Amino acid sequence: MSTKFVLNETSYFGKGAREELANEIKKRGFQKVFLVTDEALIGAGVTAKVEEVLKIARIPYYIYSKVKPNPTIKNVTDGVTSCKRTKADVIVAVGGGSSIDTAKGISIVTTNPDRKDIKSLNGLSNTVNKGMPIIALPTTAGTAAEVTINYVITDEDAKIKMVCVDPNDIPILSIVDSELMASMPKSLAAATGMDALTHAIEGYITAAHNEMSDMFHMKAIQMIFKYLPAAVNEKNEEAIEMMGMAQYIAGMGFSNVGLGIVHSMAHQLGAVYDTPHGIANAMLLPTVMRFNGEVCANRFREILVNIGRPDAAHLNDQDVINTFVWMISELSKTVGITQNIKDYGVKEEDLEMLSEKAMNDPCKPGNPREVSKEDFIELYRRAMQ
Image (cartoon, rainbow, N blue to C red):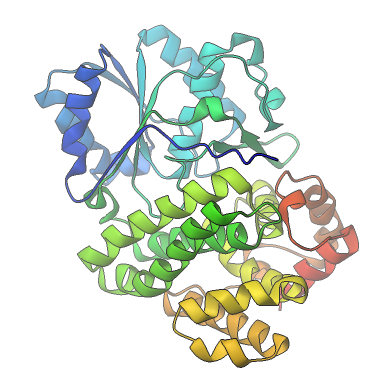
């Protein structure tokens, strides 16, 4: 039985890496840029750093900034209309997962007009054509959307997050420039960092994990535990750069092997309450890892040994689970995430509805432990405490 692994073509890393953008655009023969970003990044002057590169190189561009933090079907369809009107031939996405995911949706529909009903893209996709070329410049250290084959779009009518999985959407070029991440407020740096940790941990224990994905995920976990506090609390330049690398490394892994029910549950919080995705993951991760620990304590033991707890090699399974969950919770507190899901509007009477939606989430099959609707209800309940 073969194992398939998909990676993007080219990536640049490091402070000031965005300067490579103009040369890459010209080398590839592109004539006009459709720049996808959001209003907050424009207001903060982050998008301007990329615009400057385009202006100096005299590369024409059009800005599309109608992107919500949890991007919607309308964000994508409006973007498709604008992109076609501008006659651009390459998309440059500047932002976190929201901007890059919106760009991916625009990219796919532009070259696959038969899929203009965005709802048809939910789950494993069977699109025929590669999407319009995307160059992605992430401004957060968390989603790894610049290197994955996934994108997430909210169906506001159904109040669900659609997880679209399509190798045709992967960016042709990623530029991970720590200077674009440096202006993140502490709360966003913390949330996106915990999102990256969730990707790495879920990817390491997912049912489909393999030797190559294990390599990526373990390295990402080590780096996040080492660098996240300094990146958030001290704005340490090296730590910010290393977090940009860590979240990218995690993305190479989970894009190929999937995730688990932390994401199944977090997607519902984002769709129903507009909870920021990284915060939702951070609040749910300890609870779900305690649940999953009953079937993957040995995987937790391997992680602990590699993040400074060599004594875990000799602990019993329950102590391993307790230690691992405690370390996750302490890291979250260290970067200022102390809320539970009740603080974001979840009520007891919502739990059945949330659990029904989670049962249908595309990330659920990857979880290492079988989960029922009743399990989801109980997990949400525990996460409220």
